[in-house]
Length: 97
Image 1 (cartoon, helix red, strand yellow):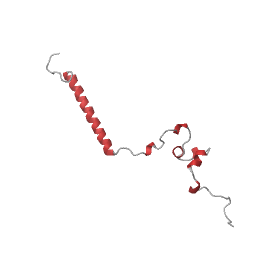
Image 2 (cartoon, rainbow, N blue to C red):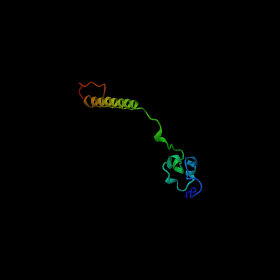
Image 3 (cartoon, rainbow, N blue to C red):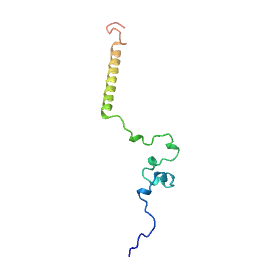
Image 4 (cartoon, rainbow, N blue to C red):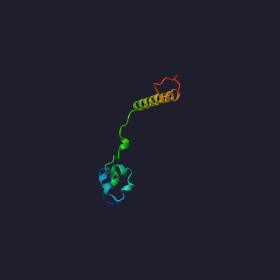
């Protein structure tokens, strides 16, 4: 009853797959990941299409940078408040204007 497959050849497994073949395929948009794994066209020339997978700063470094930025802003606000209340920095606040 069963004498073999009805069609010859293979069904296209992992061994036959190549992203270079996808680049040349006219239906490349049907492949998931085609824009990263098989970039074609002017938009990808000179661009890092894997930018999202790069390692970034650690959580501790980010927290320290935010803390330093907040501290700097607080110091600037204190200087601005002192200048608004007492005039320019270094001037005598009791001197008449």
